[in-house]
Length: 100
Image (cartoon, rainbow, N blue to C red):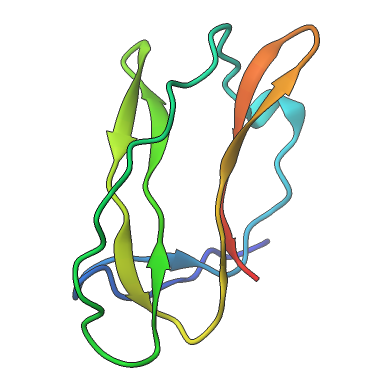
């Protein structure tokens, strides 16, 4: 059984995913309309050395795109931003960000 480990800081609370099973196409929610343009966020000052910015993104919630704000995380690595991927027949699906 694959376990999920949630560790991190989101301005003191957040989370980072370290071990997840590879999703199958059945795990994706497909959306027929692409996301709006990303919102430009002014980053607040870095809280401490070693914190990495995890950028904001649109998530699909309640039948519409909803913006999730970015945050500083104390992880010690680099963040590879998630993105919406378009497929020719099923629409858009979210590819989550991860620590790379």
